[in-house]
Length: 192
Length: 192
Image (tube, rainbow over all chains, first blue to last red; front, side, top):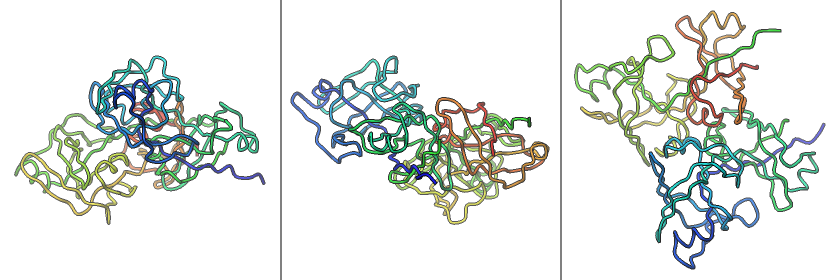
């Protein structure tokens, strides 16, 4: 019998990644993000800092910034959040923001409106290269992952992302976590 | 080859069912719910009237009332809503509210605080008896339903509810609809 491919689940609440330039505008020249807590992926962290975001219909006052700074500013929200903001962002892999909706972002020192950058993150699993090799999984492969329990379900089209800099973790958003009755620290099993 | 068991999907936003007594308190003696639009189940309707609900952490100002009046007042919310209100309701079938959290409900003429009645509705399919007979499905049976597309997934533990007074429809909440990228009018397929 082959080993069960168990994967820890991380449920991502809405959050934002910012460029260095936008951090300077929102928090002031020379400001840097400070670490609230490290995330599962090495080097990534939740910052103490938050921003407000304003869509055409609604807003969120405290959106957590994830650091470090990135090459492009990107707001990742659940589809429930998208309805509240009045936006229709596509489901995308992180970093693929071409043609996505923009958003107004307000910090303590200033504000910026980006023309694009709002996505619903495509569910995915980070694999360290060694995990992927052991289980015969390739980068970009689409997987099926079962989450058990009262609200059990099978997620299809879960994207494999393989790198020496990743730690094994499955990322889903709050809609997906809530639909599965799952919380960060629960486990899924790759079944196909 | 057997017929594919296709089922229309209805995504239920948070809503409330009220007793006649609570309608009288919230909207005034002699007040009756008025029909905004009929629902998929015969005799059921979305009312023009809404109420506000207050949890320990947050509130919703306009929660749609579904009519007609019921024997017990019941607030059905998604797990995302539960976090916003600061409640931890269990996943339950409609009508099974023993031991569930209470909620404060405010209408234009008065307010009422119920000691129990807040649930996350268990996903289910209404079958007319003829549909159930044709497909060999029994009341209370737990089914697997696949929803395709970019956010494709398979819902497990979907409860079959069979009655001569039901119309074929699968009911999921907004978290489940959003996790599947599905909206009312989309289709699922019973696969087990």
